[in-house]
Amino acid sequence: PLKFLYKGYRPQYWYWEVIESYRRILFMSALTVVDTPIRRGFVGAGLALIGSVVYRELSPYQQPTTNLMNLVVQYQITVLFIYASLLLNHDGEAYTGVLAGVDTESVGGIIVIFQLSMFIFAFVLGYNFLRKWRLRTEKLREAMAQQMAEE
Image (cartoon, rainbow, N blue to C red; front, side, top):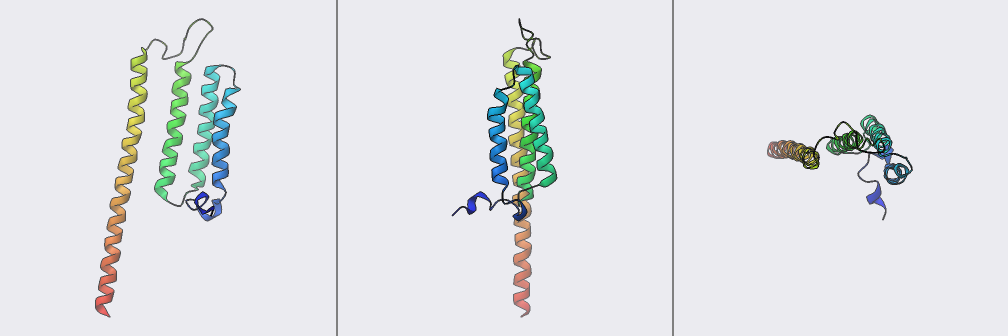
C-alpha cells in the first residue's frame, strides 16, 4: 500500500522520499530563523546548491529524465534565491542591492521569463524523451516481428 512512496526511486534509494520531506521542511522552517532578507536569500541559495550537488551525484530516481529535471529545478531554486539576495539588500533605510534601482515590473518580468524558460526546457526534454522512447519501441516491435517471422 505504500509503494507509491518509493517506486520512482532506484532500489538503493528507497528511503529518498523521507530525505526529500526533510529538505522541504528545512526550506520552510529554517530560513525563517535567519535574521535579514539578504542572509536568508544566501542561506537558501547555499542550501539549494548543496541539494543540487547531492541530487547530481546520487541521481536517486529511476528515470534519467526525472533526475535531470530535478537537477534543473534545484538550479532554478538556487538562481531564484541568489536573485532575491541581490534584490533585497537592505541597509536599514532603503534597499541598496544590486537590483535596487530596477523597477518592479522589470524585476518581475525577468523572473517570469526565467521561470517560463525552464518550462520550455522541460517541454523539450520531455519531447526528446518520448521521441527516443517511441523509436526504441518501434525497433523492438520490428525485431520481435522479424523474429516471429523467422520461426
